[in-house]
Image (tube, rainbow, N blue to C red):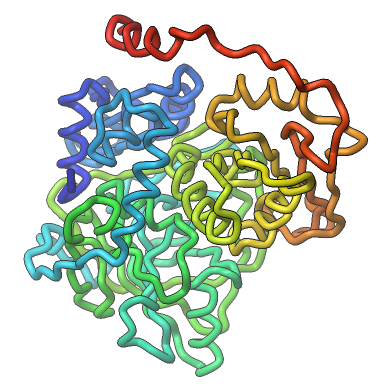
Length: 473
């Protein structure tokens, strides 16, 4: 199923009992982020939350949606699957749809966010229901928007237009701070613009259907369009519209679109901010955005992403869009790779199942993971298991670690590897030792251990799994 916008997806969640509308009065702080954290703390099958009675706003205005893809049922519904689809099946479905890239893009001129426009006296604190996500955040953040920029040297190349997700600090009525890492596409765009002495036009689309939000966090190649990937993942053309001030392409169904420029050469302190690692990131000098135009729907829904100590919605949103690219890259070099689970802290820890061909094969796969485009900044701990282990079943993975891993023979340490600076264990920032943990069964020429007589499931187990699946609700 392709969802036109956030509202259509919320309706689908409600039909599947995966949306909780809350109309009692709530405080922006700490109630909104606390509710999102509580939902993911309680269950991995939790609903999305929609608040419409926030103190300081007229009821029905200033609506906030949280935890929209914050559970496996919601993630399955995003893909148009039954909400009870197991995670491993969602993984392979996601990987199969990738093969349809590039999908088609549909340009339309009737975007609903064009309903209201403001280009003077902009005050984001009045327009948006802003709040701090965590107690010691320096201020309010926009952290689930699609941020669009173009390559200044090749502005007509559609694939080099980037639609990504970045943390954005609201610093003043019309000024934002942004963290564009040098390795990110937006970081490259900004460097090129500043080398030319120019500001970088930017559009920030808030409140989108979940596929583009998911794709916006995927590690795609520099010239691969996120919109064309969103079309492939949803199985239908992806709708976009042109932002009137910058000419950038933004999602057709957005709730709010902010337009402006990243100011050439200007830097201000940004942060601290409670990050996906579960720790505050500290403060760094970062670029500044000046907003000069706002377009929005009537009574827009402000979608927010709570992130902090995992698991939060961010972990569900980025789970498979991290795992699948890593799987595809590894499988191109090692066809024996069966599946990849890189769901943990954006792939700082990953689990790879592989059908071994010779002793040492699993260690080579683990080392390769660390040199993939995503692995260079993540993949700090890689666990490799045999093909009889489901990497998404942690009970099976822990069993393999318990009985197939030998600390003397199966631990490979890579000193002083690269990692994202947000990893709190890195020292100095961006440098860390990495490890491959080989939890596979030793095969020739490795002949240690006693693995000759493994216990198998009783012969009718698979049949009974089918029977019980239909009976257990």
